[in-house]
Amino acid sequence: EPEVTQTPSHQVTQMGQEVILRCVPISNHLYFYWYRQILGQKVEFLVSFYNNEISEKSEIFDDQFSVERPDGSNFTLKIRSTKLEDSAMYFCASSGLRDRMNTEAFFGQGTRLTVV
Amino acid sequence: QQPVQSPQAVILREGEDAVINCSSSKALYSVHWYRQKHGEAPVFLMILLKGGEQKGHEKISASFNEKKQQSSLYLTASQLSYSGTYFCGTLERDNAGNMLTFGGGTRLMVKP
Image (cartoon, rainbow over all chains, first blue to last red; front, side):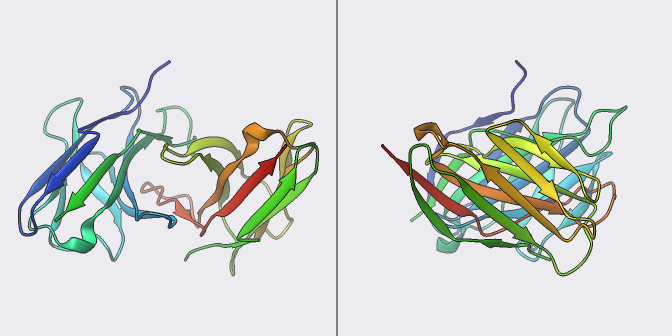
């Protein structure tokens, strides 16, 4: 069964450092997302990406964040200068088949980011 | 706008039923239900698109009211495997972004 894969599973970084979280969405999906979940809290939307550009972003997704789809398979989230409060589980998701709107989002297993 | 989920937590005995509610202040395009087990990714359960819709199966089903502002998830004759946190995700409009906004979650614990 196709799945969304994320690497690394766990990333520890020092405050102020840049991190790149990587995702390989399901190959025939059209929409890609990043969500984050602070420990014990709800899943929060960060950004959605469609047709090679950002379609929606939340207030959390400020200038320190950027996304890229550098090739046909990878989808990355970059945090330029990490802060302690960026520590969270980051989930990548993908959805949307060409001939069906509003299909379910499939989530990757997440990258646990710890900023020290 | 974030949907409101209730209750925040439920403890059940195996075999008991539960209802989890998800409400929005305005009409929604769709509601998605997910279950997340501790330390794992959310797993899709179902989508509701039409007002008045009910879907699912005997054990886990959901409804969407006519005004498309409230959805309920019904867990019948609960099993231990139902334990986890349930999130509703809502779409406010049919846009290309598909910005799914999640509620705060309902933590369900099923005990033997």
